[in-house]
Length: 179
Image (cartoon, helix red, strand yellow):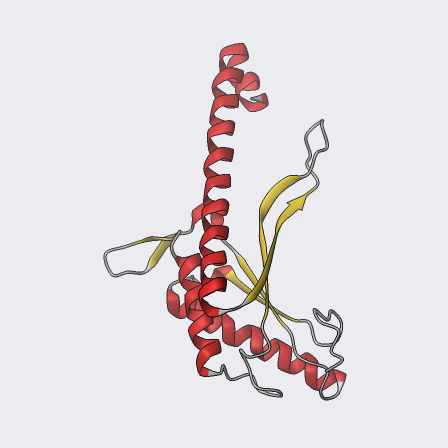
C-alpha cells in the first residue's frame, strides 16, 4: 500500500494494499498446503516431525514479525545408522517423500527441469547425529548427512543453488541423547 501510495496516491495505495493482501494469502496457502502434505508423509512414514513458522522482524511501522517460511524438524533415529551418512532403505524412502512435497511447488519446463520456485523457495538442511563419537566426528558426520539429504532434494528437482547445508554436530542437540 505504501509503494502504491508513493507512486499513484490514494488509488495506488488501494491497489497496492490489495496486491499485498493477495500475495500474502497465496503465500500462506502454499505454506499451509505444504505443512499438511508434510504431516501426511510423517504419518505414512511414522516420522516425528514438528513445524513452526520462520519469522523475521518487520521493517514496517508496526514492527510485527513477518513470516518468511516454515521450519520443519524431523526427529527420526532410523534414517541413518549410527556413525553413517548413508540412508537406511526406510530413511531414503522417507526423505524422497519429503522432497516430493517441496518439489510440488516448483514450476518446470518441458524437460522437467525446475524453472522457478514458489516464493523463491530456498531450503536449509541441518544434519544431526547422536552423541556417539567425538565432537569433531559428529560435526563432520552431521554435515555429510545434511548433504545426503540435499542430494535427495536435488534429485527430486530442487535447484542446487537453492539448497544450503549445515552440520549441527553436538552444538544443537534435538534429543537428550541419553540412550
